[in-house]
Image (tube, rainbow, N blue to C red; front, side):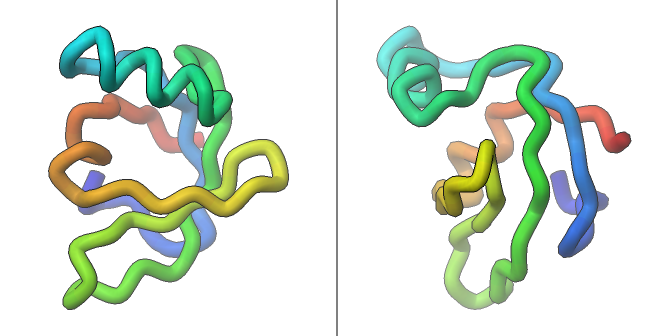
Length: 72
């Protein structure tokens, strides 16, 4: 996750965590195979901001680390 820089694209390959967390991500439109683009995320805020299908979404760093990505 930390290697993903601002403006880079990645594909979701796996989501770890509880079934409630996975269901929450599905309501946001995140599933395996979805492409995301990382936006600017200041390090002091502990939030990761990214674009997903034209929507801007922010997740806590701890939650974002449960998502496994592959850079495109």
